[in-house]
Length: 106
Image 1: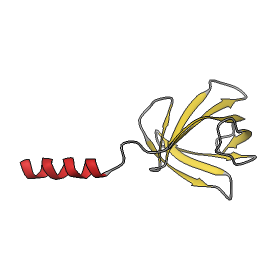
Image 2: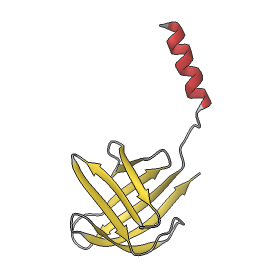
Image 3: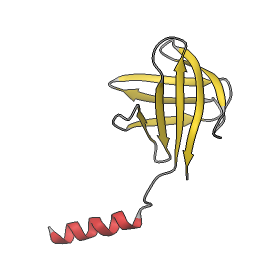
Image 4: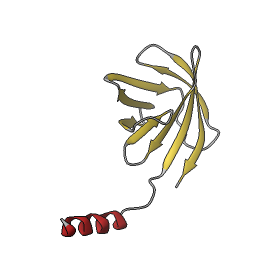
């Protein structure tokens, strides 16, 4: 048991302390805003909830995830990752609005 804990500690020490993240605020035409934090480890949190896996296709300008058993993809009019980038989006569930990159970490 001790050996396992020591190996786990070494493994954790070898990993970066924080993953790079991009925070995007989704302001739908109807309903409440959603803040999504996308990590470069392939997970995202929505409004501070539990992390979920996501996929990203920059060429198609699409990000997809499954939350509580429901798959959803957001397709953006333009692709940008710099803070302040704003673009309209539509989702596979029929909603639309404006997405804004609000923060980034390295």
